[in-house]
Image (cartoon, rainbow, N blue to C red; front, side, top):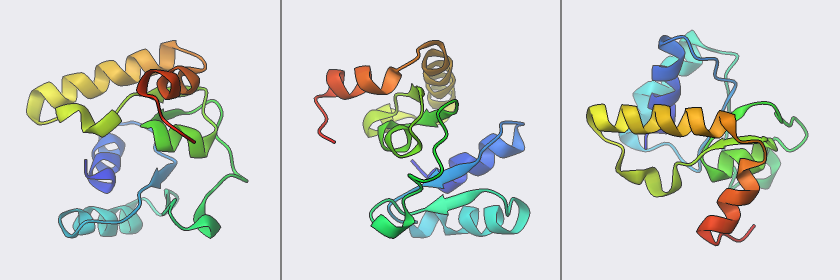
Length: 122
């Protein structure tokens, strides 16, 4: 996944994006990061691998987090399962993402079940 490209795409299609959490910015995602900074300066960007950057002091419990790590760091009650990107490419990837987002909003406490189902360690 290109986290900055995904955030930019969602913003351009009317979604509200508050924060992007990514360990690094791949060279092929750099242009998206620059466009985000220029056109959407209120969108926060964090590298969770740096403990000083983690936004645990600004939880977003009512947000829909995309992916386990984002859900954990945001303290979100709603998580769209993007474990290992799930092979999201092209039109099928868009459909898969939208379904995951819809399902994530339906479930409260989705993070706990996601951790348990994937056998993740926090």
